[in-house]
Amino acid sequence: MELSDGLRVILKGHLGWGKCRLDCFAGMLLALVRLKRMNLTQLAIAFTSQADPKSRYRRLQRFFREVVFDYDAIASLIMQLFDFQEKSYYLTLDRTNWKWGEKNLNILTLGIVYQGAAIPVYWLVLNKQGNSSQRERIALLQRFIGRFGRRGILGILGDREFIGDHW
Image 1 (cartoon, rainbow, N blue to C red):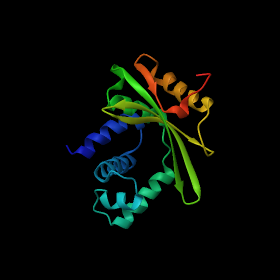
Image 2: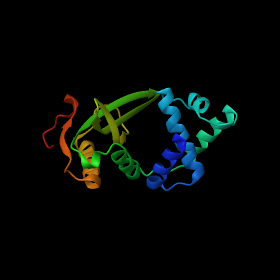
Image 3: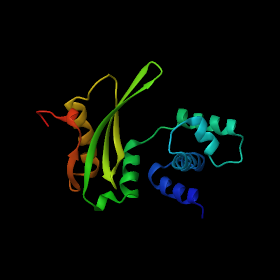
């Protein structure tokens, strides 16, 4: 059994997609691990396939255009893959802002600390510039707690941007 076969089996149990979509997503994830960056052109080249790189690129474009992600299912997959459900852990809050041409991408992320890194579990695209609000931070935490409970949470880590009266 190849790594992509095992990954497809794990993903199928959580995402409920067909074989073609699972193969595409598994290939993308493995290419991402090899490349350590997200660029569709480079992903298409690193994607293991006999197809022409241009065909692989179009396949990836179709995948992102057509597939609807169930973010609760992805969060459950992450929790299971890292075995967080049976452990105690710290949550992290972080906000990042990227520029895509003229557009600002402002993303609030809730992650779990794992071996010195934060594994993203939930995120919220903020349709504005600047800091997140207490309401937005609370919404992310409530979504996590609603899905996984409070039992394993040791605390929440974040920088001074996340100070607030209500929470």
